[in-house]
Image (tube, rainbow over all chains, first blue to last red; front, side, top):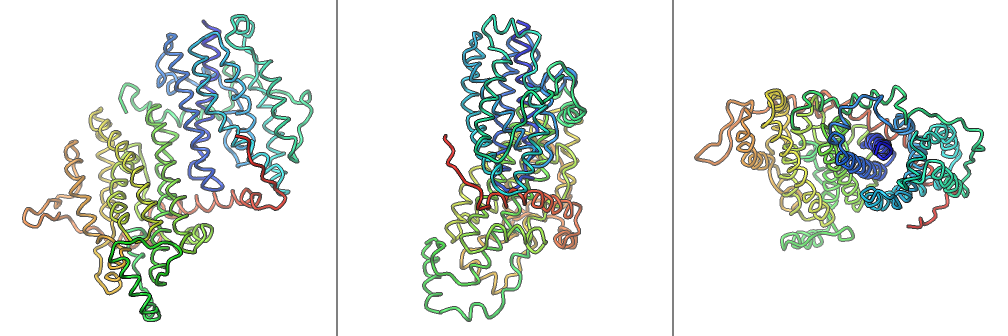
Length: 249
Length: 328
């Protein structure tokens, strides 16, 4: 059961933190349509994290609000990619592309999970993520082939984000157990499929990928090692909740 | 109401005199019969200009209004509130999108409108120049500022310009959920701990004066105002809307055990009209003119967002970009 919980925590934490970051675009997007799109994705992702924390709750973990709003940063299992600040739109877009490509594939794999409640949830989430990757791919292809500035910006953000993106696939101590029990086919399998899709989407653009082997992954997130940005994000997120955690808001 | 009074400033006395009297008469007869005016129909220049100004200021109020509440999305306590507030503020941005489109049907582009917002030439609802210090302020906005907006928008939805009316119908439907959400948040504060109750009482004390300003000062009934009412551009007086708001919400606020910070506030049993301490209209004017607690900050945020997003918009217009239909 520990292997399953660890898997659920890392996926749920990823969805919560990226959802929180996406919501920070509300009111600041480069055009209204993008404010609205990032807010939609934020709502999906925070909703997905809630559903995953509920699943954890049925496995004996504390309720979703407690887990999300009361844990310290070192107990979060998200990859570092999702906790980085939004920066400029080019970084947010590139992160959205790299991360959601991985998530869409992850949930597709999880539809086959031997843990039925997870497989059922994965089917629903996979449907929602289809729109997220559609959004990311459309924009990456558009901005990755448009002006000199847009191409340069996306290229720089891609090079900055890739080491963190490889941190998505940081193996868990329970990889073998997850694979043996057919709960999840494992990070390595996901990484291989992800590389193919990323290459396919970028091919028609003027963006170039460095050789995969030349990228040093930024690991640690899955073990609770985070950048300072996660602490400040969590402080802000729980600011009101922690005034009185016993109160109902 | 939007832009508080600026909406109804001088019209240029000769505008109507230069209109074709036959067409003008036919136009007025259509409105009299309750028909809607559509973008390709003939309309007097004054009608067009007034509607652009009104719809544009309404649109600006939606995007600027997203800012004080938006800052609480990342702090909302618990999943339920976080998800609801995200959806609510997203709706507001969506309303801006609808309204800019409605105004564009009259001939002014969204880009021109945003430029006028940033330069300070066109205004937005004054209430968003006040800060939301605590979670309770965000709850006040969701419940009562949205309630005030609904009073105004329901009136305007019966106006004469088709695209604006249709946008408002949809907006009002969504706003009614915001109202429920805001009321729900305030009920939880009212029924919560002493600290939670105090939070909302303080928010109420802070926000009541701007709320009384919200509908604007009493209208000066000039010929200009009469024309706009005849054309169904202005559907209710500021005082009538304020009175309606007080009628609907003072009892609800008091029901929750909170004290409205105006000892004069009472409904006159003979006239059925609310008496209240006259709002400080000097402060109102000062804030409209740019000297409010947050005017600068609000416009700076918009200006920075526009500047930071410029390369994205340029890349969308680039002839080198090949838009390929996504495979859904």
